[in-house]
Image (cartoon, rainbow, N blue to C red):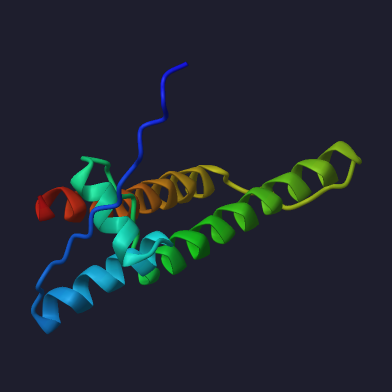
Length: 120
């Protein structure tokens, strides 16, 4: 039986300006990992998905709006199925709004990914 090889830990240190340190710390926090783990992953060539906190807030608010619009349409359809006479609603603006919201949500994610690509 072959002897186990010992694994050694190598310490790596980086000198950063206060601004660089703040940037890396914020990036790590927005990714939900430590700064050390962020550096390990970036050095290994991993892509770090990070969306700034403000983008996340916008992203989720837009999702809530989309869900509200879908609920309005579902209630309208349910009422019609129950035989209620309702004032007609033109669903085209709602569908257009849903498409625009989806586009905005995608832009928030892509904008963050583009920022990450530009860092390299």
